[in-house]
Length: 278
Image (tube, rainbow, N blue to C red; front, side):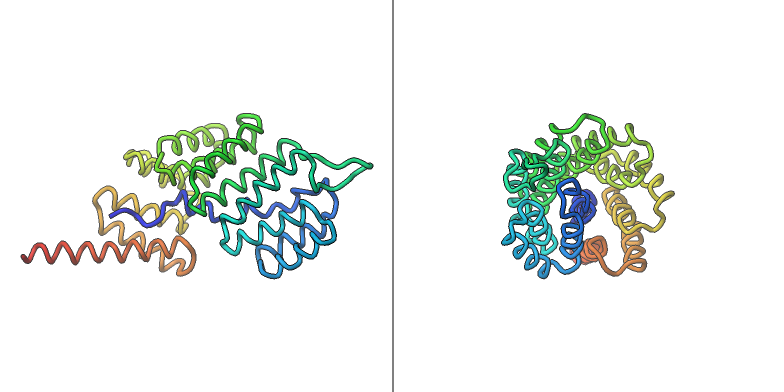
């Protein structure tokens, strides 16, 4: 039984990478932009209307980005990604960027990398893997290797690689990030998922044990624990982990994945029982 959703892909649903209120702080209109971005996450339909009105007032790139974020939160991932790519291209040359000191601003490498990285994550969730790969490589090329931003983009590339079933690249990137920053205990669950993908169950188990020390009863951790135990041929232990997840958290993408996995497990048990009675 193939697990319904990998932890690596579920992690891309986190809105943290899409709500940077400081993205255009240097460009002015900080309060308006920050309010629009916050609204995009909470009430995306309303945020789109506000962003469109702002664009009519020549709000430019900040207003367009708020609209793209709202589309993302409406799960219009492909449309959001396409808009983010266009915004990044315009930021390179200063098109529709705010004017300061009589000159139109041009985005620096860090801002461009952030935008391409956001587009990559949106492409991932739209199941446009090749486009996600292209966007994340552009983002990584813009930042110094090993920098804080570069490490975050490597985590994003790992998620994209996992969606393409390239678990070796995913594990390589994640292990490199952990080596550069040993405090990144949050990615241990992602390492476990990637290690499971390459069949290194020992490393997966080791990573999960370390992860639970920092995040006990984490839904992501419990989902991956169930995935790992099932891959190891221990369906009863897998069921225990997934049920524990649902007891702790009934809502969210991890809970949905756990329910689907339990349904598949039950069907598999029924099928095995039927074959045994034949």
